[in-house]
Amino acid sequence: MVPPSRVYDLTALLETHMPVWPTSPLPVFEPTALVSRDGYSIERIACMSHTGTHMDAPYHFLEEGLTVDRIPPERLIGSAAVLDLREALEGTRIERAALQARWPRSFQPDIALLETGWSRARASTRKYLYDFPGLTPEAAAWAADQGIHGIGTDTLGIDPFENDRYEAHKVLLQRGIWVLEALDHLDELHEGTRYTLVAAPLKISGGSGAMARVLAWEA
Image 1 (cartoon, rainbow, N blue to C red):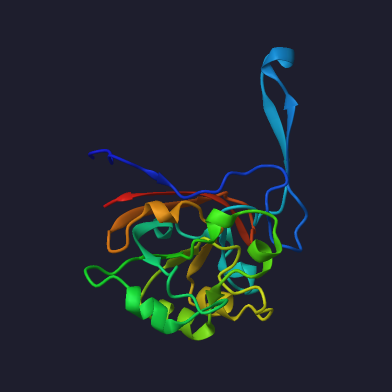
Image 2 (image 1 turned 90 degrees about the horizontal axis):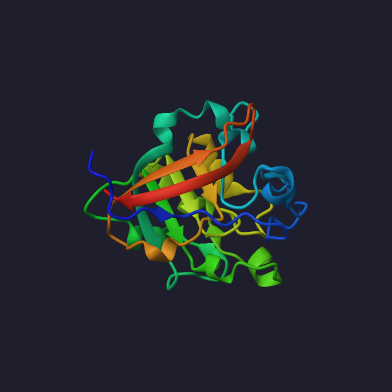
C-alpha cells in the first residue's frame, strides 16, 4: 500500500473548558503525574462520552439500536465526500435541496461530511452553542436514501438545537447510519474530491457513542 501524501485530522482538540453540549458538564483533562516529578506522565479524564468530536451510535436514541462497540469495524471506514454548505444555510435549517445541489456526481460516497463553517467559531458563546445549523428530517431522510452508512457535521449536533425531538438523529439512526458531530478542519477538504475516511470511536461496552479520532486522505 502506498501511504497517502497527506492525512487530514478532522478531530477537535480535547481540553478542559472546551465548548460542549449545553446540558453537559464541562470536561476535565488533568495531569496527575509528571515526568519531572514522578518519572512518567499520566492524565485523569472526566467527561461525557459525547465530548468533542464523537460518534453517535444507534443506541443513542433507539433502545434496540447498536451500541458503539457493536458497530462493525468495516462500517467505520469508507469513501467520503464533503458538502460545502456555507453559502446554502437557511437560518438553522439545512434543507434537502442544499444536499441535493452539492451531492457528488462522480462517485457515491459511503460517508457524507457537512461543512457549515461552524468549527471556526468554536467557543463557549451562545451563537456557537445554540444557533448552529442542522438537518431537517426531510434532508436526513434524503441523505439516508443515498445509501450512506455514516454522516458527519462540524456543529455540535446533526439536528439544530431547537429541534428537541431530535428528528434527524432518529431518521438516520433508525437506518443504522452513525453520526459524527463536532468535526474540525472540514474546510481543508475539497468538494468533489473522493476521500477515504476512518472514524475510530472508543470501544465502550454498551455505549451510546464515544469520542473518536477521525482521519481522511484522498482516495
